[in-house]
Image (cartoon, rainbow, N blue to C red; front, side, top):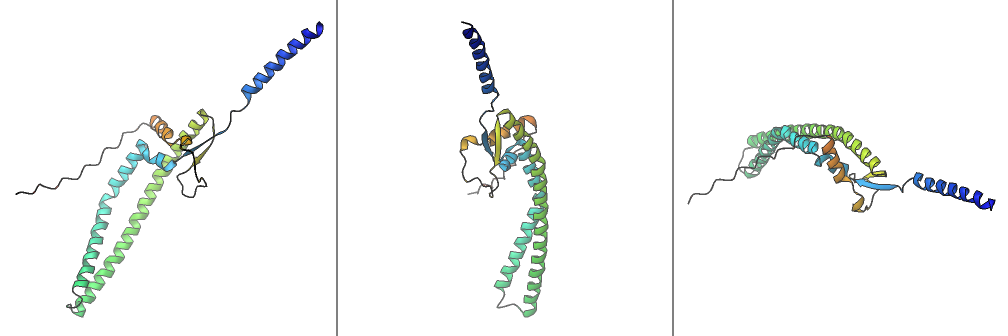
Length: 196
């Protein structure tokens, strides 16, 4: 009879230890994917930064397009007058073409480098904030690893869309960093109606 009394408390203690071990055991590790570039660009801050960048560089882009048009016009003039122009006129057009092409290439390279530098700065600034959000989201949702699939060099060949947390990260980012939503770009003016 005494053995039953000793066995029962030992059994209760064993069950309690087993239950505690089960609750203390780590949950199965979860993996998630995120498209960091899309997350950055789709946040309100990202949309506003993209719009600000476009507005900032629009005058220079327009100037480059005008220069390209001028170069194309010189080429057309050279082709059209090749049989009828004097050698001096041809030489002058060729010099104009060469000078304009060199200036255009230099200005275009400078422009692209500056745009790329600004984009990189924005991606880095917003990227740090996105990483903080991803870290917090992962901790709250017991995610052991998050893989960025925005890089084409990513070793991820396929991922189940159900593990993609990009939209959740965007929502959490916008909640954590409220910003003014970007305003819509003005619509181009409609061409005037033809009079009949």
